[in-house]
Figure 1 (cartoon, rainbow, N blue to C red):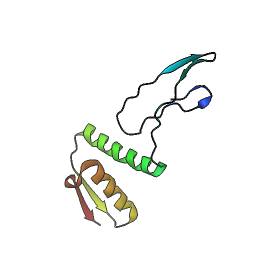
Figure 2 (cartoon, rainbow, N blue to C red):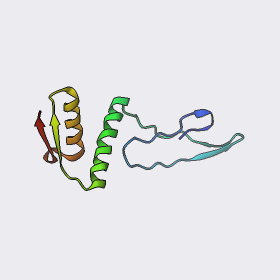
Figure 3 (spheres, rainbow, N blue to C red):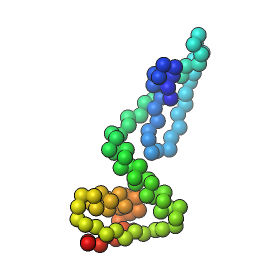
Length: 99
């Protein structure tokens, strides 16, 4: 939550459900939020990875798929895809075939 001028008053954690109580003060410039908790955000690479895991999990739930079969080349991109799938679906729902 930002106050006038872009000053950060509250910051919630990303990818987590939460709630916050916010108190406001009336000033000559209008209502201003009192300073509150400011969650520490993960770095951009961690956030990107988390988005990919959540997106895959959401896609699988919406389509009704429960398991995946991945064709892996042995490169770093295949390893990352396999890690995302395992984090999203669990190791028991991911099968890999080396190509």
